[in-house]
Length: 357
Image (cartoon, rainbow, N blue to C red):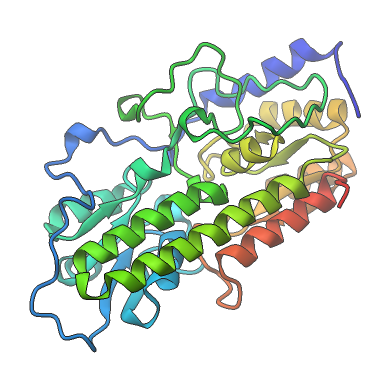
């Protein structure tokens, strides 16, 4: 265990600097902008539907596609608007795709994550839309976004995972987290990297499908509960797998992994804050080098669909390794589903953080 005291002031300064980077992928839409409430209660059942005809459902990102596929099975054809190899944060939609949203049986999306999707959903006037952001309980990154506590490596997880006050891996003493403060635009959208939050989303998706297709409600509800149990078990697996790590801080290209960090007790440092497309300045790279040296970091993590060049160069200069973490907003490999990708991330972190397994 490495406890750094003499460099605490330097560390805080270094980590605070990236709070100034624009958080393009943070949730920023105000609820007041919506003319509709996209809830289960407001969704209308499909009329005159043939029992043999699968539902046509569009989701904004792969994790939501995964939930529908697992819960609906062969009763739905599901497509994610964010296809393989696409950076989810900068997604653009063609007029044809926008038109298809109106014709879909239902849309499930995450409000505030992708502006193009938010606008298209609003324009579609589809009567069956679910916004998953409320049940996901997005955490406010807050004004003290990068004030990580690096003193010691205490992994007491007893009260680590409390949805009502989760802070996505950051210290926010005195910060009010009640409700979903969209007007500040500081919400971290990457909830699916916490499997327990995904379990809650599974329950909501099951409820939604039962509402719009009541003739199959019993099957949807049963599948949702089974999936919820699987995802909660995965959450425990993630926590146990990262409970005893020699290196407590992990450095990643952008801050997609705050929920995973909070859930497991690790500390996340993002080179480019919440915006994966922001190019870090030389000063920021220098700050990261201090983090690496002071905390004994052995691995820098790049991400799929984001250029690794900057971190690869930094790792070479520091004499440390580079590995890949997947934010799982897209499914780049059809052979790997959400749970498999989460376990792959777990194995990557266990190796890079020198964790006991």
